[in-house]
Amino acid sequence: MNATTRIEQALLACDALHQQAIDLGLDRICALLAKLGNPHLHLPPVIHVAGSNGKGSCIAFVAAMAQAQGLRVHVHTSPHLLCLNERFVLAGQPIADAQLADLLEEVLQINQGAPATQFELLIAAMFLVFSRTPADIVIIETGLGGELDATNVVPDPALSIITPITLEHTDWLGSKISGIAAAKAGIIKPNCPVISAAQMDVARDILQITAEKNRASIQFMAEDFSALHEDARLVWQDERQLLDLPLPTLPGAHQIENAALAIAAAVHFGWPQSAIATGLTKVHWPGRLQKIIPIPPLSPDTEMWLDGAHNPHAAKALAAFLRQQNQQRPAELHLVVAMQSTKDVAGFLAHFEALQPNIHLVPLQHAPALAAKTEQYGSGASVHASVQQAFQAISEQPVRLVVTGSLYLVGEVLGMR
Image (tube, rainbow, N blue to C red; front, side, top):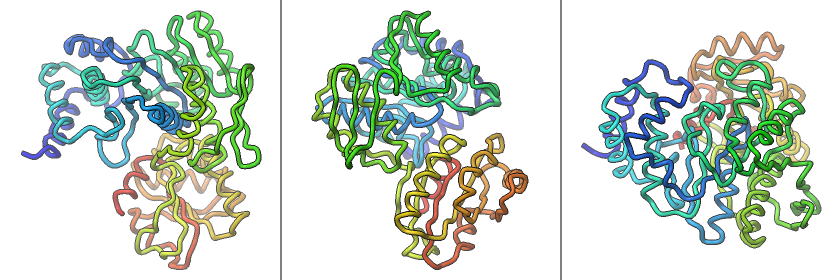
């Protein structure tokens, strides 16, 4: 049996252990980690990252800066785009299929059929392989929320980073920013430093209060440090220094904020300016304003972008980028969108209204529900049975095409190349 088949069978075995795909709580993951010898307590310094938007980009910047000065970096992010291996980056390289298959089988065997979600089993596997593989630093992204997320078991992270907090996962975290912020604030640990994006007042207050209760220092962007795009440079500044840096290679004005958080982390660890600059220009993060060669039957002259934006805050950033693109080179805009039925589809699409896009809805879970929400929002949209059908419906003339609404959709399209 090849490694790919073994991985697939292991994932099926994981799914069979719990009726729910998501079941927040730390009891099961802690019990499993205890069986594995508590590998989460035997790691290099950990950076834990939570937030609603920009987590992946921020992590990519931090990892690139660390690697630029020769540090070995383990990285865990989720979800993956094309293959599960992407979630297990060992010293800069995705885990090999055979090693991943062995790892999952080992975790399942030691778990002995105890209830656990697939995500919890994958997180346990991540901690196990990270503890066994030499590295200088570990960067871990939360899955959902923070306080009750399976990643939130490291008692003393070297640094916690919290990216912008917005309404998201309301079916799990509630419909108020205060509740969502409280969940994210759950990654703040006693005496462990925190770096935060600029936040809405209610979220900022909750983070500040939580940090004070934990005697944890906290820095906020726009208060303790800032970053500006000036004369084709990124100028980052805090009360002690000003750094004149190259602009990040990841496109979009919002990447200035993501880069600023990463720079603050690098400054906290004392990394040299040369490594910070190299990281900004060497960073790579697929599926976030990623420009690709058009996929047939699209015109080869179509300008095609992939972006995993999936909530109104991320849509606002994407729309700002598209407005800038349209000013530089006007083009007919088409959006191919798939979103989970629980998402704020109307709020997401509203940010694109002024751009007058042609909207093409494709399925993830329930395309008709998306169509109904779009009609209520007031912009007509066409519904297609598949991404390929949406591409066929788009004119063969060159257009500006953006695939967005879900990282799962972005991964599907990347797999079509």
